[in-house]
Length: 210
Image (cartoon, rainbow, N blue to C red; front, side, top):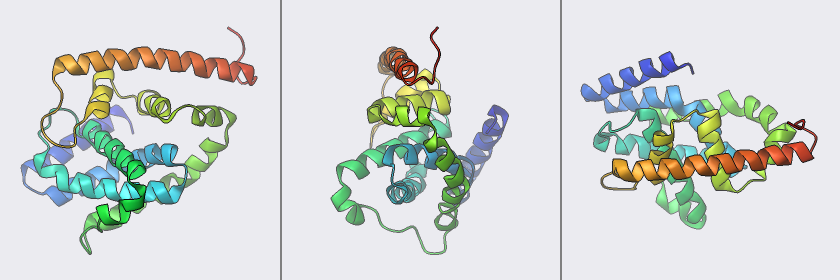
């Protein structure tokens, strides 16, 4: 999605929220941002069934969280924060996931829309994951994979990335000072991970010497 398309989508979602059309806002968000967020989840859960369950739970949490969203950041950043928190919850409490997440309301737009990004991105992800460089990225710790996806693939600004990482489950978000410190930490970690990935690629013959 091009920046101008994202800006238009953000305006559309906010206008729907301002009019109190929360289901329409959630539907627009899932339709617009769903494919990239589903791809983000597949990158970390490896098994598409797991990613699909997390995506369904993410869709519900997004829908239920909309009334409390205060637009302190872009909707896209907030959506990634919800997706990341949902993913962490799923991994930590895998045995209890059936109890934690119920189905979306029958016949709702979201129930149908959350199916769409899976099919739209499946063929792309299959090709991407077959590349040798993708395999090297997958060998990194999950936190480093997450950092690469959000910064390189999704192009989140450092402060937005810090918001995603620090996003609380409830209550107010972190202060600007805390966000700046976390953004600086993530920037340093990103440089380390880039160098590590470069060296791995060089050893595999995928990257030529500088």
